[in-house]
Length: 361
Image (cartoon, rainbow, N blue to C red):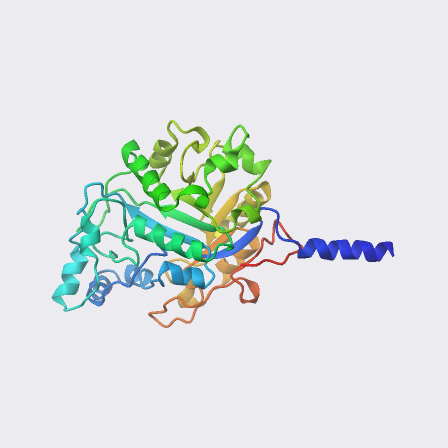
């Protein structure tokens, strides 16, 4: 009888929901906003730099359709444009127009003040949601329509230094307190009230954010369902400016990417799980959230190479990001698709919940 009770208890524990929002693993998308590059621009790219052109030969479904497909981590690239019009005349659009292509370029939205969303100025300049406010509104609308969804992680990336390539417009540098405050304001305007899981909530009464995720931990999965959290992925000078006057990111809208020893460290980004799988596993065990990649620049897709994908999943990284989730456009007909084992898009974290559990997406 005692053996039966123990077995029943173990079965019950395996079926229980994960305790915290970092006890899951989900499939995410990389450059989630990215639209298809116009044919005329791609033709020019292939003539100049075929390898780079291949690396840009992917694009995505609208954000809401990605979420419908089970994607629970998104990436948005931003460019500051406080006065509006900075990116209203991209060189690539002139090429497309000369070739007679209708790209749907949203010139009016690009003329208005506010953060813009696209990949590379003048080249990969088309976006599925054009502005940060539009992108966040699309996610928020979907979230409100699906109130019990797993927490959605959004990575906001900013390439805010001049390109070494000729003909590429230079972005505004973001190590500017006014621009960072404006960024937080756009985020909190789009994701109001309790929609956003913020550093203050996670830190609680702990001395630092770093201490909190290693001791009291992240909010429960139940409390995090139907909500969104954001990681700011930027160069060091911008990260420093973002936490200036905000120790442990007090009052800030986003988490940051800081070295493991820093008081603001709660989320890490690892580009190659084949190289850093052991480090990811260690961080995950300690309570951090980690985002990593299963493929990059279409390389793995062109060779049907799943080694990085397997390493990403086995590492326990909570978000494994791909350009090839089920249903993603496949312009070069590569036939490459990434899911978690069993075709799932979310599961209990294999490192934090090794016995598994039942998880509603």
